[in-house]
Length: 80
Picture 1 (tube, rainbow, N blue to C red):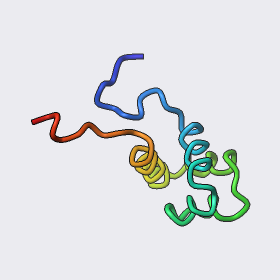
Picture 2: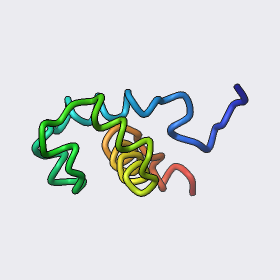
Picture 3: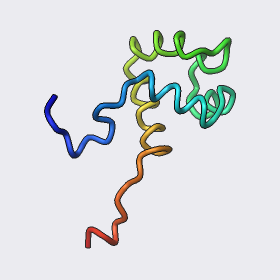
Picture 4: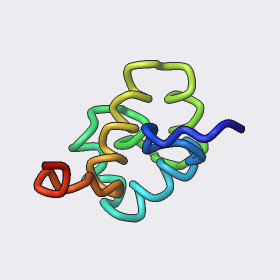
């Protein structure tokens, strides 16, 4: 694997993202944040992964929420 310093998701699997988000928010809140049926109706990591892997827009939403929730962005003051 090549280093990817500008990719905050490098080395993080989709399964880890879904698992961490479901533990952090709970399935009900996760379903409110991202309107995906697999998060609201009989949710599980397995069923969610099956859908998200096939559906590009759903994956983007999960990745965006994961970054917002768990990946700290550098303080803009430090860059100046």
